[in-house]
Amino acid sequence: MGSPAWYRSLYWRIALGFVALLAALLLVQGLLFLWLTARVDQSPAGRTPQQLADYVARQLSLALTDEPRLDLDAYVRERFADVPRAFAVVMADGRRTSNRPDALPGGFPGTMMGGPGGRGGRGGGRGGAAGRGGRGNAAPDTEAPFRLPRRGGPNSAPIVVEGRQVGIVAVPPGPAALVALREFGPALAVTGLALLIAGATAAALLIFGPAHRRLRRLEDAARALGEGRTEVRADDASGDEVAVLAGAFNRMADDLQARARALADADRARRQLLADVSHELMTPLTAIRGYVQTLAMPGVAPDEDTRRRFLAIVDQETYKLEAIIGDLLDLARLEGGGEQRVHETIPVGELFRRVVDRHLPDLEANGITAEVTVDPATPPLVGNAARLEQALQNLAANAIRHMPGGGTLTLAAAPHDHSVRITVRDTGPGIPAAHLPHIFERFYKADAARAGAKIRSGSGLGLSIVRAIVHHHGGEVTAANGDTGGAVFTITLPVGHAPATVLSHTRGGTDDGAGA
Image (cartoon, rainbow, N blue to C red; front, side):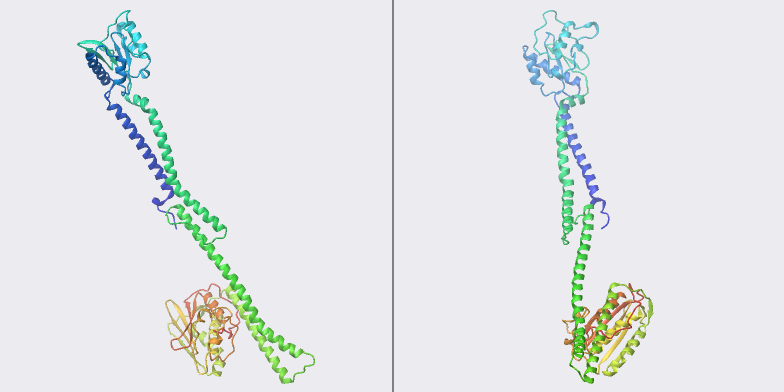
């Protein structure tokens, strides 16, 4: 598994997730700010300080017209409590009030009552005091009434009752944004903090949470694999980097499981080989020891014919023991890959001629006919000529051993799908189906199942050697029963294949093939 697509990448998911999260947080906070600002803009106060002053002055003019003895302070605080921008009210009789006294700048509205010529006098000073926190409905100034200006300056409006100015409304200058920030800043800060906590929680649950759980499962799988549980696998269903890592872990686990299985199989094969070798070697050794001890017994003087017959049996068992040891050495070299490579061009017809010549005495003795067929289009083989001949010799010996007199041994070769197919066929009783899957195993014999054997059984290693030679040449060998009877062995070798381990040291072929 290569690098994941960008839209499946964990890094991109985290990056895009954070971008989306930040965008959502900014959007929510922006909408909240716009909503709060809209409350300021859409309130009865209007949009500008001058509009607020005109609106308040008009409302106070109407209220004082209806009720001249109006409680000004209570009315202003109740009627304009929802107006976030602060304003000051100064009456001609000295009363002063504000909807938000603590929000007025210092000295306001006293500075408004000053102006050129010093109009306003002490009344302006008292107005400044009231603006800094004094309560409205103050007692009228008994020292000297003052004259109100028609307008106290920018952002102000006169309060007029029955055509006479009785007061003035003044709004301190300043942008609406500062008013909104002063009014709604704490709410925005609390909301922003809450959104930050909620966003961090959502990121932990939605972005890092799944990745953390998958990494934890991968960690558990790695720990289980370290404990020897080679069957454990990680979840690699997703397509991000964690899935790539899980896939690599699974491939490693598959490889370790295959190696563990191969080691277990090799250990079983080693134990079985030791048992089989011990059994096969014990038989001739027991015979040799028995006859030698008989000949060496004191007081026993066998006649010359008996002594010669015993020695002949000892000699046969010695050759049998030598053949078993030689086959074991051959099989060890073939399966261990410990011999030099040899690349030779080998005509198939030449191999067949050598096989027939080698077994000609046995063929004539049993009345067996050898038929050789080589397709003219058959290309030559590349490999070790001695080893390939040894494989064919073993197959031929195996066929002759289990074929009744008067039968036919067929050697055929033909090209097949960029390879050469070699067939060794006999007219014997064939191989029982139950034995077919096992005949290439070491020391496996099925002589009892095949009638008509004229030659004693071999070591049980011949077919194992055949399979090892063919595999080293990159080919395959199979066994089956022919449609008209008899056993059919088929070797398929690639054309021009350079063997992985082809052998220079040979025994020149053997007729001691496995009894199948």
